[in-house]
Length: 140
Image (cartoon, rainbow, N blue to C red):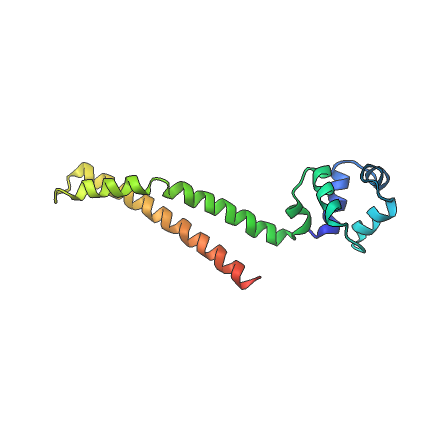
């Protein structure tokens, strides 16, 4: 959705008429109509006011959906990556402890497999993050 479509959607979702919205924002009904038709855009001050009025972010109002999806995907992957690497120091120490005596028993082998799966998961998350970053560089 573009800005105009979002304004129409949000206004209707909030069961608000153009007249009521215009009154609340201290603009004319024609101004609201022009925004909804894509004939004009509000000032930055009014963008901020609109975001508060509808309870959405200014990013939501200004960015098209594909930009938001990329941004949201990036945030989710970054959080997942940070969560997964949070215990890397502990994993490293555990690995050193397992291999330090030169012998690996069944319990240690099982733990090595678990650590390996964790590291593979971190690698997949890192690859996903890198793909999102690269796709953003290709589409400025």
